[in-house]
Image (tube, rainbow, N blue to C red; front, side, top):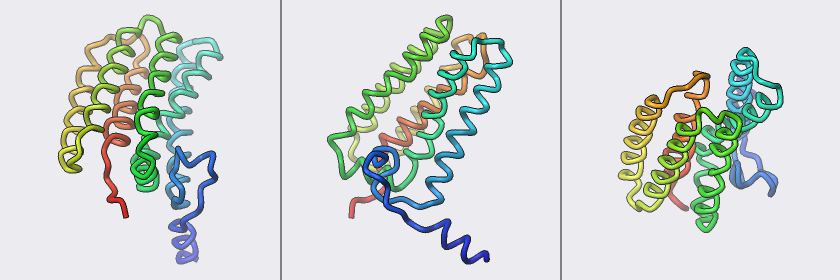
Length: 189
């Protein structure tokens, strides 16, 4: 039975065309499970915290949706299949980075008192992602990306938050884009 579970867990599956920008063309069952469990856990924990703060349910739902995407994106962007997909489809890299202006923009609208925080996270993350993406040396990319994530997260705490759960956004967003997406970890075959 353990061998069967091991075999299924490591089985590679073809990803439907509409989901390839999230998971690549082929990925492991284990990767898909981890991405979606991470996404749901992140969204659930954020929703739970926001509900307790007394926010309207529509704000909770929208914020949870953003955290679902960002949390799941951390696991997806660190996967071999997604990393490889964006190396093969290099022309999609800049549009993928640019579309991530939406996440902090929506959160800033939902939580206007946190506008300076979300503006900082947006500007720092997109600038750092573009800089790391431009570096060709893989090891240097990883080292610079790690440095930028640490510095970016550390400075994010200089912005006071009425809702402490919002501090989760900076590390997730930065790891997803700077470390997960901008760094090319897998060699092209």
